[in-house]
Length: 284
Image 1: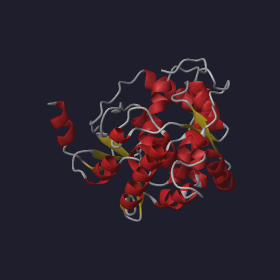
Image 2: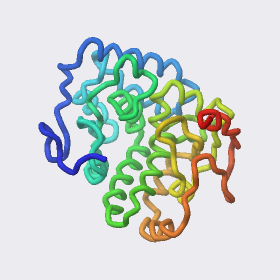
Image 3: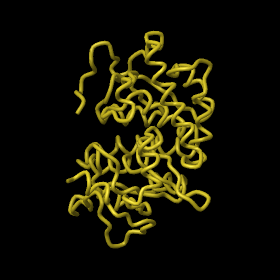
Image 4: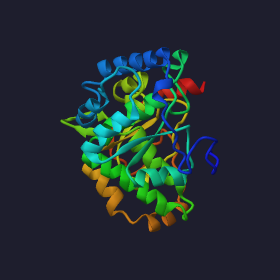
């Protein structure tokens, strides 16, 4: 968990200069390698909103995007900014930025030997994974509503439940689109392996989105997900965030047990019942 005090060199809101001129040629090359791999893989897998949003990343120079130039494009599209932070930030800081249409992004990039897995989000995950979806007006409104709801939730002792909503939508969500499943979650679109696993593997369950169900479900932080939750549309997601009275929901959830990753429970709209073979093999 991040300290409540910003590190040396950071502003009170934890932002720092991106330092674009300090990136090395090798760091830019890593971005270009990751970018090329994913843009070849994602057509037919990522949702239309994400693919449209990729254009905001096609900037005037190759390599890691300059956040100032990126913000100019994003502001014209949906009024969002991209601001640099040194790493993970406290919950209240995170929610405050989102509530004010500022997306926080780490300014560092993974090493060449970390192309396929990195535990802490880097600039490729944060920018390639998240920013294209922020160019979609409905999804951009959902992220702002999530930040506003997060600020309201701070006194309810339910941040773990709210984090699951973010995890299973913004990070690892699927959407039904044109009769098929498509990716919109940043943790999937920024990962070559999970871009294939989430849609192609027989192992994970794919379950229709339900707010209470999602907020009761624990998740994996160390490997591919065992459950993917599928929304019908981004309008559905926005309405859920805006129309739900979360205070009584938090009170109800406090008295209910959690669901383990990989469970199917009564009432699920199961789109695909997975074998869970991948998780079972990894557990051995």
